[in-house]
View 1 (spheres, rainbow, N blue to C red):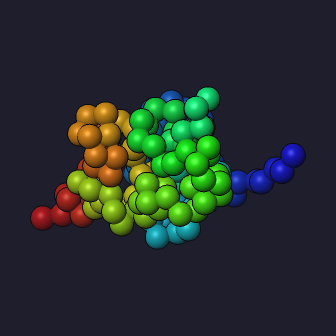
View 2 (view 1 turned 135 degrees about the horizontal axis):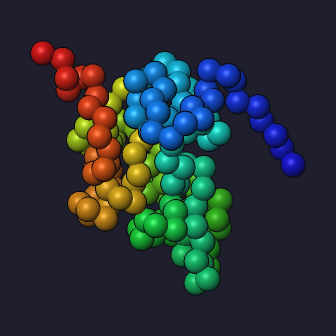
Length: 139
């Protein structure tokens, strides 16, 4: 298989509940504007993974019940590359609430399934995140 090594600066902390560069939950470090890949990103729904049901329905993940398309009606590649849902999930600038203001939005992006479950909007802020973005704490 393919093995990618993660640079030391991006390793998750080994102890539970720790912080890496000020972000709770032990998220990898790095600068907020730094490009991240699927190896280091938080939520991978629709960006690095998806779920295909036994009926052919394609969802961003098994916990987010918003359908991007159906492989019985269109090619998977077309759904993956052209679905409005997947394209929205791949654009951190569309995130709402404190996720949209967060300096870690490119790295974390919160859990889109939890946001949807609580608000009905998969782009809403992560409801269980305790981190307060710097933009929102400055006086």
